[in-house]
Amino acid sequence: MVNVYSKISDVRVGKLPWLLKVLVMCLWIVKSNFIPCQENSIEMVLIDDEKGSKIHVTVRRHLIHLFKDILIEGKFFSAGFKSSCDAFVDHQVQSNIWPGQFN
Image (cartoon, rainbow, N blue to C red; front, side, top):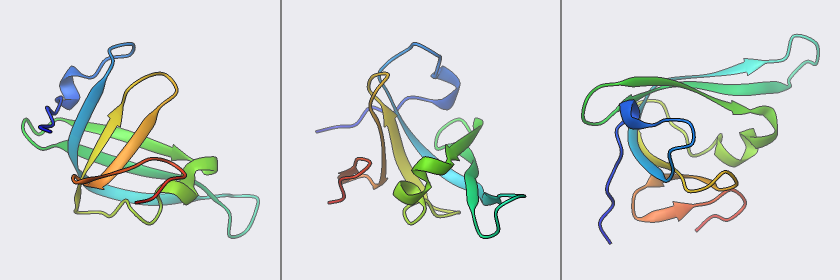
């Protein structure tokens, strides 16, 4: 199966589906100001593989456990959105990693 990747600049609200191949240019974890040791979010700047377009992405607190170990600064990964309910991240293009299901 051949993956046709979208460009970051082509992603629009309501335009589905899309699949991105991006580089995690910068990644940091935002800690809670009120609860010691609690992580509130993962923040990232992603850069498009082809055009060099950038986008800021937030992984919210309730999803951190799904993505913390697979998102690595300086590495490429694939991310896609198929419907308003389905999001996935694939840090190795060969295997799909859906939240809650690791291959």
